[in-house]
Length: 201
Image 1 (cartoon, one colour):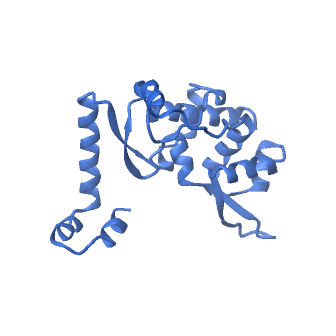
Image 2: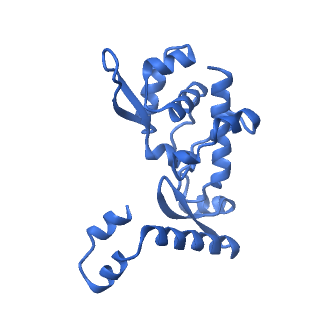
C-alpha cells in the first residue's frame, strides 16, 4: 500500500524524499504515534486494521457521536451457523465448500451465500482435485469486521482450547470507523466464534 501510494504521487522533491523512507521505518513511526496517542489519553486512537492505519474515536464517545451524526443502519449480526462456518474457513483457507460441510456435518450453501454477499468471504481459486471445485478464503473486510491487522493475529488453535473467553452470540458487527470497540475485544468475539465452531462442528 505504501509503495502504491508513493508510485502514483506527484514527482516533486518532498515526494522523492518520502519515497526513500523504508516501509519498516514508517510502520515503526506509526506504532510509536499510536503509543503516544494512547499514553496521552486522547479521544481518538491510531489502529492498524486489515493492513491499513486509521484514526478511530474511543468507544466511550459512541453515545455522543450517535447524537451528533445519527445511527446508520447496519447489516444484521451473523448467525451462529455463519460464525461457525466463517471460523472454519478462516483457519483452513483455502477450503472447498465440501470440506466445510464435512467438518460441520451440514449443508452450508445458504450460509456461504450470506458470507459472500456480506463480503467476508471470496473465491480463492480451484482445488487441484477431481472436478476442480472452487476454494474460498477470507477478505480484507473479514479483518475489519473482527478488528484484526492480518490473519496472523488470529488466536492459535491451542489457545482457543485453553481459553473459552466468549461466545459466538457476543460477536457483533463493528465497522472500523467511529467509536469502535478495542481490537482486543473484537478478537475475543472471534475466539468465541471459533471455539464454538470446534465444539459444535
